[in-house]
Length: 56
Image (tube, rainbow, N blue to C red; front, side):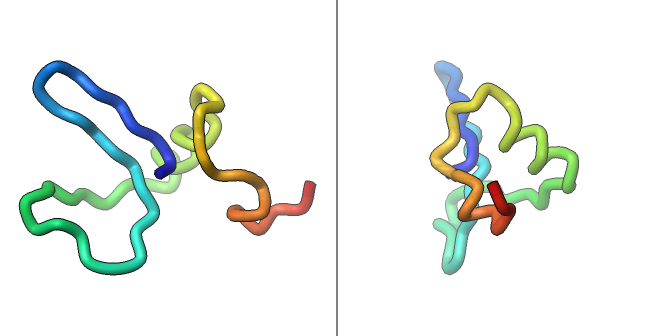
């Protein structure tokens, strides 16, 4: 999970997926900018530098 946001009526998830996604979910492509902003956003991600393959 890269980022998650929730409201009373819906949840929005930005996730790296390797496999089948539940067909009831709505799936959208994201831009490189969206991805970078999600990783740099509020610092609450489960990803770290090793997952990005970026040296420390």
